Image (spheres, rainbow, N blue to C red):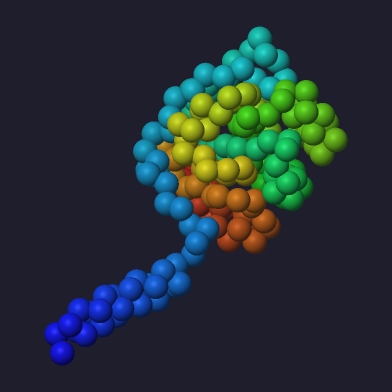
Length: 176
């Protein structure tokens, strides 16, 4: 009897873990950076390699940092939403061009529109690694002090923008 009890206990335990796992969103990857100061960086800008942008240039206003690349198909899906959102909501949106060729990224923005105040050029992806980027696109919401308050993995659609991101931005803009 006891020799059957051990495998049965293991089976029940694995079944419980499996059921628990099925109830979670597989796309949700918690970020250890939430509620922490955004990692520092100083990178050349995409449009002017002689000019730099740093996290200090972004602090002071509630901002979004969108990690994107011209080779990213999901970024193309998201891009029209970002273009519309900047016009509709007057968002403070910065780009982090990730592991891309500068010329490809510039052509991409020229053809699809440029919603970004400025894009930092992260040619080798080191800054993306500091931010815990798993893949593009990813978007980070920073408060006025440069603290990461939200991370969105994958392309942003209109529903997510209206239901999640904009209410968070409005809430953060009310903070002192």
